[in-house]
Length: 350
Image 1 (cartoon, rainbow, N blue to C red):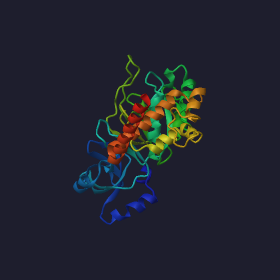
Image 2 (spheres, rainbow, N blue to C red):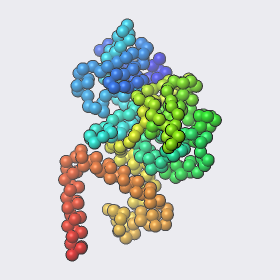
Image 3 (cartoon, helix red, strand yellow):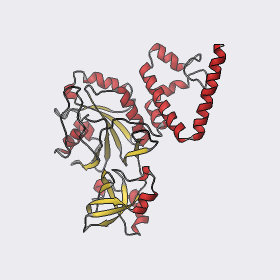
Image 4 (cartoon, helix red, strand yellow):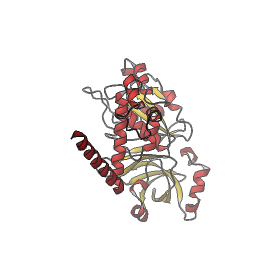
């Protein structure tokens, strides 16, 4: 049972210290409002957190779907208590929704992040760039799935547009109606391999899971006729074992995807942009008005699209804003920078 869900010798070595405490290993398959479903050698168990663990753990350390945990099992009752989370191989993280400065772990221990968007009115290439940054930061390999290809008159045009910003990332156009692209997506889901689906509400994530499973495992709803967007169906994160032996993690649609500690992910997503920086005359070029700025030159000749540059700048500002909110020294330095700029502007004006 454990091997079917991805258990390995490396995980066993990490678990050995807990075995002496009569705990058992299990994987979190469902995470919903403080109640978890675990699967392990003792079957499926409903679990809650041990009091000490719940008190001492940071918010990002709580179990999520995909995690491996050490639990005290009560198979006769069908319940368990989670005492620890094993070290994560990969972690998909976003800023928690709202104004609070907190991280939210969306999924753990996935091999592939499948970024799902539909080929209808909901398509947004700038949003894809944001999802790509999060995917690269996770440590997993990203791939992009363009659903509802049967409803699109220019599939290849959309694929080309996505490939122009998702450098080196596989892009798959999929239709669950015709079966197009399903084998390509299924190639990421070999035995004991785990993929997570990320995307906004109604892009067809649950429908895709059902198609890969060959049965209606997850509830789905039709798209709205007025704007072409699907209706929100999934309300919790659920890890599903497919007939292929692979595992796929469905997640609720995200109304917003705030970046969290994603400098590396942004750099990987905008590698073409950051490569230009080395060609600027000045090492500290702000890429605004300096002479011989490679970014401005690329914008002028069309090598770099203005919208892509604006997207990069926006994401960098978002990361800087998070850094300032969480780091008092960074806030002070930013305030001094703007005071200096203000003084410079006044001096120039006079």
